[in-house]
Amino acid sequence: MITLAAFSLSLILAITFHEFSHAYAAASLGDNTARSQGRLTLNPLAHLEPFGTILIFLAGFGWGKPTPVNPMFLRIGYRPGMAAVSLAGPVSNVIVAILFAIPLRAGLIESGQSGLSIAGFSSDAILTFTLEQLVFWNLLLAVFNLLPIAPLDGFKVVLGLLPRNAANSFARLEPYGPGILLVIIALGFLSPDLRILSMIIGPILNSLSFVILGRPLM
Image (tube, rainbow, N blue to C red; front, top):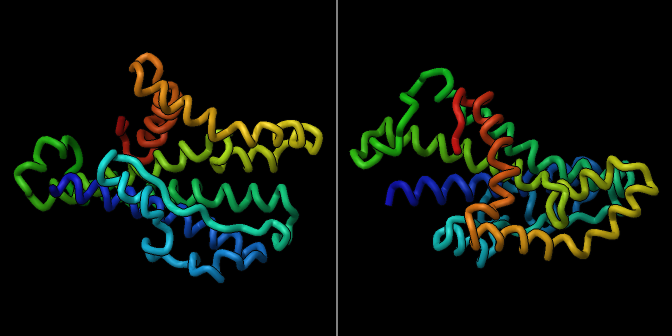
């Protein structure tokens, strides 16, 4: 129960920080659409999507409500504006992961094999496990969302960085993005050898966690 609570809380907070940062970036660039819909807040209830939240508890993954953005109001233009707003979510997750890793990296509490000691319900073990989950889910959300596949943030980031002609060609892939993503995820359930997402995300996440935490988390 404690493990589930720490796991769920960590993922919910990671989603909240992610979506709030999209809203904050959009508002900073002149678009108050998210603010007007009550999304410029760190209250998790404003960012959680009902079905995605239920899946967090039942299946170990989930999602939040996409942050509404009207690119017409972004002062720096459509493509660079959407790239900046999209990048804000993953960047915020990395920053939050670093902040939660500081107590572990600095040795302020015991780090290490918290999964083995959590059954003893010691406060240090519970706190360690929770902080590790917060670091893990924030890093995972950042890396996953930076994949250049629509509707993930990475798609709009790449779109904003490419020259106009290349961006126009790349934009034609957007309608196929969700289908491609679903196929990639489904393949992972069919066979461990087809876990393409893990093959891509795992090494990046472990490299980041090694730099931030001093050891891999996967």
